[in-house]
Each structure stands twice: as C-alpha cells, then as structure tokens.
Image (cartoon, rainbow, N blue to C red; front, side, top):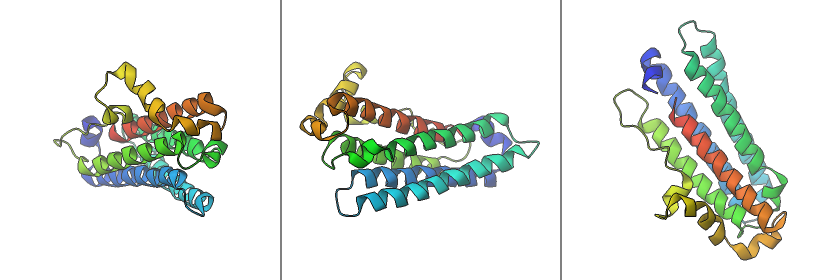
Length: 199
C-alpha cells in the first residue's frame, strides 16, 4: 500500500480511499437489506444493489482513468480491478435466490448482518489510513476472528453451529446448502475488505 501511495499524489490517494469506503459502505447496506425482516425487503435489496453496483463502477472507472496515465503503478490498477470483481461476486451472492428466500431469523440473515458490520469497519479504515506513515488497518482480521477467542479450526464450525440451526429447513437446500452459502458469503466479504485495505 505504501509503495502505491508514494507513486500517486495525495489527492488521488484520497479519492481512491473515499471511493473504496463508499464501495464497502454500500455493500454493507446491501447486506443489511438482506437481513431486514420488515415489509418491502425485496425492494430495499434491489435498491441497495443498484447503489452498491454504482459505487463499484465509480471505483473501476477510476482504475480505467489511472491506466491511461503513464506513471500509474500497474499493481494498484490491478488491485482496483480485482476489488471491483470481488465486489461483484459479493453482490451476486447477496442478491441470489438463496438470499431472497432466506428467512430473516435464519443463518443467512445473521451472517449478512455480520458481513455488514465487517464491511462498515473496512470503510472506516479506508478513510482513516489513506496516507504513508499512518498505522496499518487490521483488515486481515476476519469476521470469524472478531466473534470468538476460540482456535481458528473451531471458529468456522462455531459460526454456522450457532446461527439459528433450527431455521435452516426454511432456507434453500437445507442445512448443508445454507452452511455453504454462509461460508461463501463470509469469504467474499473478507476478501473484499482485504483488497480494499491493500490499495
């Protein structure tokens, strides 16, 4: 991250940080829409998805503009593109039939709330540490790591085990399908936040 910051002017770094923060925040809003049980849930999901896609498109457009500048570092431009692709994967999962069918008290909704908090924290970090010499954000700490002091081998099982296991029959593909979906959702969110921190 510092290498890229030394090559890019501070103003460009700040704009990138702001666009990364907006991308993470809008995806957090989308995740909360998935978990929201009140009336109009589907409309909120679709509206949040449009805003999240717009934020990703703005970031990717920045990468396209930087690519045209001879002095732009390829590594950072590549990272911006990878961040956009990771955001797209997360949106596709959050707007999949499994998310729309998920019951608001079930495992998918609970995981979506965790994902939203994780992404909002990443958005704060993107704005807090945009320049060289600042402390490095702890984006490597995953969602599972924030939940429990248990050893890593137990966190993954523990996460799914306590997420309303009784509700899984009401969610697509039963318990096994829900477990796979939750793991994928968390992995996508953690990857997105990790990429956003390495600009």
